[in-house]
Each structure stands twice: as C-alpha cells, then as structure tokens.
Length: 226
Length: 304
Image 1 (cartoon, each protein chain N blue to C red):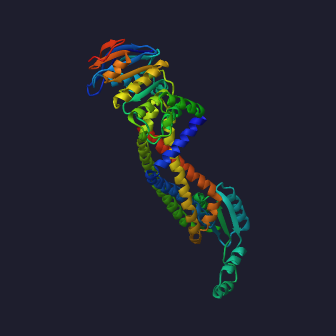
Image 2 (cartoon, rainbow over the protein chains, first blue to last red):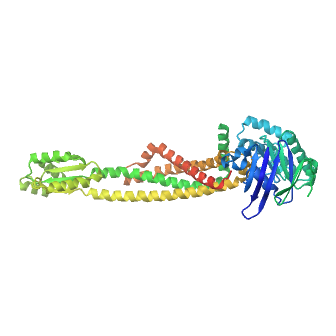
Image 3 (cartoon, rainbow over the protein chains, first blue to last red):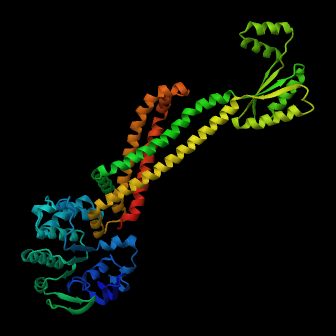
C-alpha cells in the first residue's frame, strides 16, 4: 500500500528530518513508529500526508507517487487518510457532533449520510451520549476519541496518528489504543508514532524505530527498544 | 454541488456575523467610495440640462449689408445648408429684423430716432446653428472664408459669434476637470476600500485558522475552503451598497429643492426614475469590490 524508496528530507537551515528511508507498509497493517524527539517521526508522517515534499526519493501510495501530485489534487489524496494529533485540534465552537460532521461536510457528503455515519462513529468511540457537548466539556481522553471519530468518519484507507496518547493518562491511553486496534480490525491501515513504551508493548504489532532521521530497526512484532 | 454551495453560503454568513465589528471599517470605506461614484454620476446628470439649455443659445450670426439682394441671400442660405456641420440656418429678413428690434426696445427715444431715419437701417441676418457645440469653430472658420471671398464680401457686413460659446467652453472645462478630479478621488477610495477589506478578510482567515486547518486535514476542496471568505467579502459589499443607497436617498430628497434653484433638474425626481439602476449599481459594485478584496487576500493567506 505504501512504499518509500530512498526518501530524504533536508530543511533550509540544514536540519535533516529524514535520511534515506526505504520502507513498505501493507494494507491492513498496524505500524508503530518509535524514537526520541527529533528522530524524524513527524517529518516522515508529514511526507506521508503530502504536507512536505521530500528532497530526495519517492513515496508511493497504491502505485501513485504522491510527491508528484499537483497541489490542486492533493485534497483528493488527503481524503484517503485520517489524521489524529496529540493536541486533538478540535474546533472549540462546534459540538462533538458538529466537529465530526464538519469533516464530512468539507468533503462534500450529503446530510443524510452525515447523520448516519456520525452516529455510527460516535458509537464506535463510545461517545454517543456526548454528541451535543462542546470540546471544553470533555476530558483529554474524550477529546482524543472525538478526534479519532473525525479521522475515521470519511472511511479512510489509512489512519495516521501522531503521538495520539501524548497528553493522556494511562487509563485513557489504554482506551485509545483499544479504539485504534478496533479500527485496524475493521480494515484500516494504522500508522502511529509514540514515545510510550506501554502503548507499543500492548499493541504487539510491527515497530519501526527511528534515530537521527534513519530507520535503525524494523521488527514485525516487536516491543519498545531504544 | 448544491449542498456544498449551501454550506459555503452558511459558513460565509457565519463569518460575516462573527467578524462584524472588525468589518465595520471595511464597510465604511466601501460606502464612501460607492457614494463618490454615485456623486460623479449624479453631478454629471445634474449639469446636463443646464448645459443643454446653454447650448441652445449658441449660434453664429451673419449680418448682411442693407443693400444685399434677396436672391444672393437665398443662394448663400442654400449653400450653407449643404454644409455637414450646419444644423439650421434661420433667415431673418430686414423687415423681420426691424420688427424684432422694435419689440425689444422699451425706450421711446430710440423708436422715435428710428422713425426719423425714415428707412430700415438693419440688414438681414442669418442665425446659424451647428449640429454639435464642438462644430461651431469649423462653421465660424467657414463663414470667415465666405466673408473674405470677392463674391460675398460686398454683401456681408460682419460675422458674429455669440458669447455663450465662450461660457460653455469654460463650463465644459470646469465640468471635465471636476469629473476627472472626482474619478481620481473615487479610484483612490476604491483602492483604499480594497486594501481595508483585504486586511479584514485576512483577519477573518486568521480567526478561522482552526477550521481551515481541519479542512486541510480532511481534504476539503479549494472551492469549499475559499468559498466562505469570498461570500464574506461579498456580504460586506452588499451591506455597504445598501447603506450607501440608504444614505443617498434621503440626502438627495433634502438637497433636491436647493439644487433645483441653481440647476434646472429636480434631482430627486430624476433619482426616482433611476433608483433601480443606481441601487443595483451600488450593490453590485460593492459586491464586486468585496469579492476582489477577498480573492486577493485568499490568494496570499489561505493555503489549502
């Protein structure tokens, strides 16, 4: 599904984000990317999202080289990816329901479908009771569940989660990990970056370890080793 | 498509409502620039009848000697009427000229003096009108040639330009200058309105940065992301156009009686006949102004 070949990213100031990364990820996989701050995890995710273009190498997503997608068509590519961030990025003046519905509205879905799908994902993340609440009424874990619901509501092929449990306590972390596993079981490919050893160990799935922009370890069923 | 359009309109209106206080300055400058355009148009309409009336009074007079023969005069009249620029040649016979003169005189002394002469001292006159005010120079120079020709020199006493021409020329210069000045001021105001609206939309984009980030995240189209800001800009223009019309209407109503004393036109009556055109102009021009400003701001500040 995803194939990176010799991907490097150098920034203008000379900082190196990613160095000669080659990796392939299959459909339906659950991949954790671990590494210290500055190891290149976020740079790699930004390249996958098409937010940054690599300075060298190619990135294939289902046989399409995403580095060559013109910016006007980039949105169509992004619709195939759901993204979750550490800081949730919810819209404070919209309710839980509206936050999720907004993602569907932005991609041009019909109101009847929005109603149906939002209810479904709210149930999936266990927040059907909180549909009319505003983000400020929710706990960190609940906010992250809304963000996940928003990321999956358009049924993307790939979910990218950048440190999704970074702001959460252990109980919430565990719940969020369970939700990701559920989503993965439903067929979506999940790529997740984390610092959290507990998360990686609990997942018992493929782990890619990065250091100084390079992949230094890639284990199919690994734990957190640094 | 229709659903998306609806959503864009709703989001645009929401943005307009949310940013209303910061948009006030943009709306105000738009109102002023729209009013200045309306002002130029109404001023030129106001002056038109005055100029037309003055133009009617312009003519060139050709005075014949008292001994000029009827046949020669009629021949010259036919010749003059053949000239492209000449609209009409009014032939005032000697008798008619005397009659006119007598009617104009109120002083008995002059009339008695006229009687004492015993014969008609006045020659026939041609009152020549050109088709357009600008053609009088050509007509006059043609008459100069005739006056100097050996054929007609003995029967023509003089050619006289009515002084109104000078007044009209001066008036035209003043009107042109005022219009040019007005257009320059309006252009400046339009630029100012665009800059201020541009900055307002820039602020609106900043205020909505979280929404825009989410739109980017979920792959919203450029059309969906940009649409609300264009709608917001258009709303500013719409409101500015309506306010401008609401200011203009009573202003003209109260000013019309005073203006009618100076100029011939009743501006309010004229305005009522054109209210749809003026209203549509103000609103559409306002909306175009808003849309242009938004497009400029979006191109620079909205990355999707």
